[in-house]
Amino acid sequence: MKSWIAFWNILKKDVKNYYLKPPNISWGIIFPLSWTLMQLIRSPGGNILELLPGLISMSVLFGTTSMLAVTITFERSGRSFDRLLLAPINLSVMVLAKIAGTILFGIFNALVPVIFASFLIDLSAVNWGLVFLAVLMIAITSALLGLLIAVSAKQVFEAQTFSNFFRFPMLFLCGLFIPISSLPLVLRPVSFCLPLTYGTDILRGAIVGSNTLVPLLSFGMLILFSVVLFLICRHNINRKWIL
Amino acid sequence: MGMVSVSNLKKTYGHFIAVDDISFEIEKGEIFGFLGPNGAGKTSTLNMMIGLSRPTAGEIRIDGIDIKTQTKKAQAKMGIVPDESNLYNELDGFDNLCFCAALYGMRKEEREPRARQLLEQFRLKEAGKRPFKAYSKGMRRKLTIAAALIHSPQVLFLDEPTTGIDVESSRQIRDMILELKKKGTTIFLTTHYIEEAERICDKIAFIAEGRIVASGTVPQLMESISHGHAIQFVTDKNIESLPVDLQACFKGSKVTIRPDHSLVMASDQRIPLFPVMEFFHENKVEVYEARELRPSLEDVFVKLTGIESSVLKKDKEKGGRQ
Image (tube, rainbow over all chains, first blue to last red; front, side, top):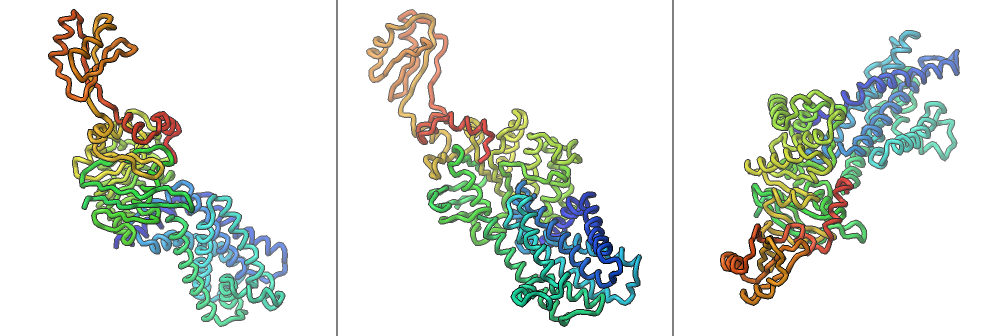
């Protein structure tokens, strides 16, 4: 019960303090909207339905990774994060509470291209249950990647630099822009080491019906990524922040 | 075993030894002052005691609980006031206190009345709805202490609680520390302020270069450097000729004249005042003032650490940030 009180209040404080601030809400809307418009302008005759999985993936990835890495680095530099480390709550509960707000923010980011597309095309054939689960899993893995960056960064600008360092290569290697089968042979194994590859594939299957992997396998891989990333983050926090 | 027990504690960073084999005990309801200049190892010791840093060697127990193996259980008993006021700038005073209470698992029905009570106690009731970032330095400090007390901890760790704040807030904080002691809270306090430690601490440890060079109660520490007694006399006339006669009259005493023309009489034995006064009377010397000279805690610190007290004063001016 005590852990639940702490979890809920950390989440509530983060949502109120960071995610519901006007600049972040506007960023959460404008950024996915820009991606969507950019794709539509680039290929005016393009099929919006085919663009949607990529737009959702990018929106979630950018929303979650930047927010968590920046907010945690910010709290670390102001030393308010020490309060969480010194509180009598389990480190896992604290990590889960910190990523929960970002996951919600990521899901909100995913809604923007979906709402935008709903005005332009018929989305009745989309498997929404699968879309939601895929978005949730992309948000979880991206949030944990953001946390991994936060543990390595000392300053907010470092966190932003590190984020871009892995985000952009990931976008090009996960099959969003170039199908994995068209990638150079040497890069293909790298694609399968990226969580976004599996998330995007599930989204493709749920929205367009053109997935290349079995959804169950993709979900299994995303769960595996989540567990491994969570354990690495927990270990790194314990090692780097409790000196 | 005391409420806080530290034994053979050591912390190294590579080849640098920050804390070198220190041991001490703090009894329940005691205020323990940890004094030393910047870089002496105060904050390193504190961080290990609160579980924010791992000891290289040694053991720390809080109410019998090993901080190394049962960190969270021990932290539940602690209130921690870091040297920087680190509450959340965007939250107001009341919400900050409620958030800190929630971290200790306090329910809404418990934390809200407690937060109101603390705001009142720290004279921050009016500021309770203002964001933390709008607080003055003294107010920020007081709210940070209030946040540490929200769950009524058994042990309170205060890192430089009065550094860089106004005189009135410092006085309020010192009064509050004494009030907590009366209620049985055990307090570990690091400070640069020798006078502050002298005024409120039951026991003091001097730390220099990672080692405790002396510890004990204030009288014990003073006794450690004071070997004898001395009385200073302020008189009405030139007394240049008196020392020789006084020394002859009171065997074993040493009499000197200070630049301010006062006379200081020192002896290994206690000096009987009445015969000395009679001596002055016979020599038609009027005595306006007679006072026993004792070493200050600052003298003790300088003598035992070899560090000039001006070093501490410089640290104070820097704001005490390590």
